[in-house]
Length: 152
Image 1 (cartoon, rainbow, N blue to C red):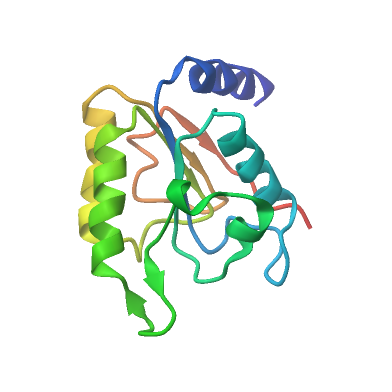
Image 2 (image 1 turned 30 degrees about the horizontal axis):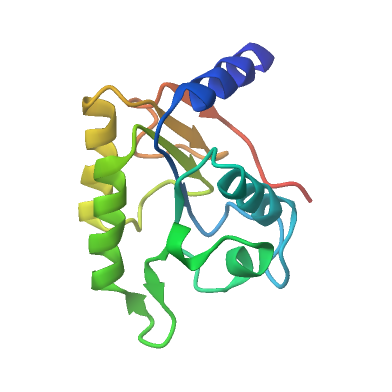
């Protein structure tokens, strides 16, 4: 597994427009920014990740320091539904990215347009990296699959 981590870091460093898709199980805390929120904010701040598409409705990534310009929240808690405008923005972000890192989701509740845009990243030759302890719909298309759980 260590060799895969080293190769993933090299792949991330070689990427021009990496993007993170974070599902509801990507984070180590739910009430306050935790290690994962802070790490993602640091990756964005350092320019290693262009943006984050988040399926969660909280503001913890923002509290951790991810600027709104780099964050696309696709769940609207006021409507208790997917925000269709945000889905369109997420698809646009995925069309520009050359590496898609998927955290904490098996993608079962991912809007179809976003799922198809993720698949297209792989079809364009961009690596798809899946980090979730369960099987996901993009495991077979992923270059790397890490069965990682959030820190407790």
